[in-house]
Length: 334
Image 1 (cartoon, rainbow, N blue to C red):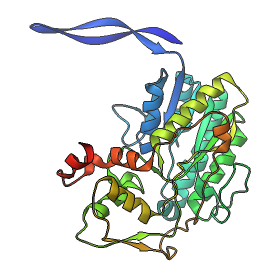
Image 2 (tube, rainbow, N blue to C red):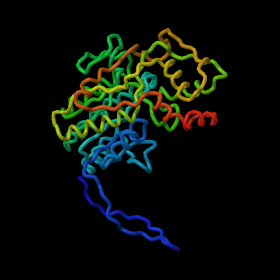
Image 3 (cartoon, one colour):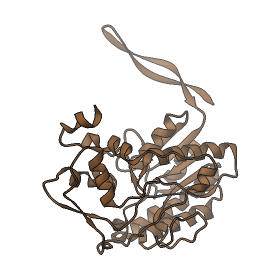
Image 4 (tube, rainbow, N blue to C red):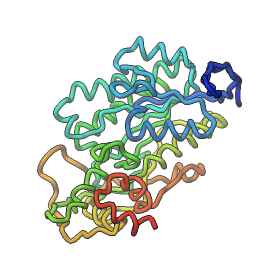
């Protein structure tokens, strides 16, 4: 499953450097990842790249120099990269995933979450690529958890509606598609605001000021490394078994409100949590959220697919670079 290609490399020798041509191994399995600059996309790219896949990532504003710069709303650009690279698998991570932004910019969100997804599904079908479309637990209203893949969706907000419309669009345009629904994510962020979980860290760290934390909505924080592993396992299973397609669920299995997540973060870093105040009323600001959209993951588990990182271990690994009080590092890591 490995080919050989020529690659130019710089070789340093005493007193000078020279350009030499060397043979390099190139994995024959090819995967294209959209949204590769985002939190999940970076993890998916890394997972495939480190497991003998020839991975190409694409992004838009932050793409270069590491990834291909592609506007997913440009159908010609999408056609060109898919047909030139000829991927066996496409993992579609790109989306407008912030519910409040979707409410305020519905047309732009629909273009990316629905129209661009439909077009990508068509292009994937054109080259025989297996498409993995990343969706959300927000397609459910949160009144009757846990939810199986066969349960009827009923999204409460526009974000959930656009992702559900995206699901329908990709399946209509490419029957050889997997829809992977996932919940709230966290992981190795470039900035705390990248995740609804990690964004709480400053409120946890600065204990001189009390902070109100939601203690109503039940969440299942999931590490992007685990989702990336599931995507790779699903892709590899599919290459052996063409019947692998349709809708799947994956999620962490630790149920927590934001207040409980914040307390767990404090505990992971030996920080105080007495300044955190649980708010048990349902939120009245912003897009509606489901109270408990727990996903039943037994379908993937029956296939032998899955990986789960304990929340405290995962959040410690994700947040330690943002720890303000360096003295705590001695107690946490030594």
